[in-house]
Amino acid sequence: MVTGIYIHIPFCSRSCAYCHFVTVPYDEGKIEKYGASLVKEIALYAQSLGKEVEVDSIYFGGGTPSLLDPRDIEEILNACRDHFAVTEDCEISLEANPDTLRCDKTTAYRNSGVNRISLGVQSFHDRELEALGRAHRMDSIAESVETLKTAGFTNINLDLLLGIPLQTAESWRAGLERIPNAGFTHVSVYMLDLDEPCALSAAISEGSLAVAEDDAVAGLYLDTIGILESYGYLQYEISNFAKPGCACRHNLKYWTREPVVGFGLASHSFDGHSRHGNFRGMERYLQALRASCLPVQWRKTLEEEEILGEKLFLGLRLNKGVRWTDLERAHSRDRLREYENFLRELGDEGFVVWEGSDVRLTPEGMLLSNEIFQQFV
Ligand code: SF4
Image 1: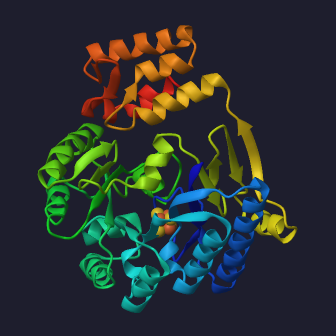
Image 2: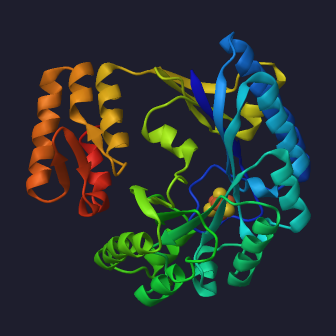
């Protein structure tokens, strides 16, 4: 079994106005305790497996992992290496915010084995960054990319947000024009999600900030696919674009339902059959590990129906889509027929394409993916 490891680093120096992630205010004392608990959790989990497991991707997500001292990152990576068979070519990604990268720190991350950075840029315009409540500003973006390159990083993802308050078609396109020759191997374009309450959704409801109409944002998303392709970034998932050979190995595991074990607060794990999730509260998480217990809050073994639903809503996120004959080999014909009829109807409306036994979303279907996937949940 080859697995990926996800490590959640929940600390942030400030709270962005649109944030829905599980975060904790930056506190050096807490970071120390948390790091020690992560190391313990990794050891406990590996012991519970009772066999050596190969790991070919490790992903530090957050929060803001780049707030951590490189020694902390190294200790956590060493724990992974001590307890798992980490492959020579393991992809080791770390999410970083542009305002947190200094030369010595970045070099130390690289020396500890981190070989991929996901840079949370979100926008190339100061007033948009301000509306989002981000800590960084435009001038730190180019600086941080240079710092990363000097430290020897050759695999850098650019994270962008579409649908931000004050964003215009011109500001979005001007941001995209900065990408060629900037040294990014991968671009992620996420739609700003304001479905859950946050400071930004409150400001929009009160009328103190506004976002573009959905149709305008949808038009920009469709344009972006072509623009990024013309720069050499091929779309491989609804929100992800990569230079050839640079798709994120770790994130692909989620969409192809390969095992990923999550460590840290609120992290989720999948072992190929069942899923489990960790406590979301810091105190409960630390307490469980003080008692030498895994900090697991819930576990679920998946029923056949749920497995089929997952194969559809995760597989259809990918541009290569889903091979229907693979589903026919593994699942009941009745339920599949129902889904096939649904997807054939969407084909007539231009939201999916059938090619032989392969079915995939069109760009217009990707825009409606949340609604389409409801059918499979
Ligand atoms: S840096 Fe990311 S995780 Fe932290 S508050 Fe901002 S959006 Fe949330």
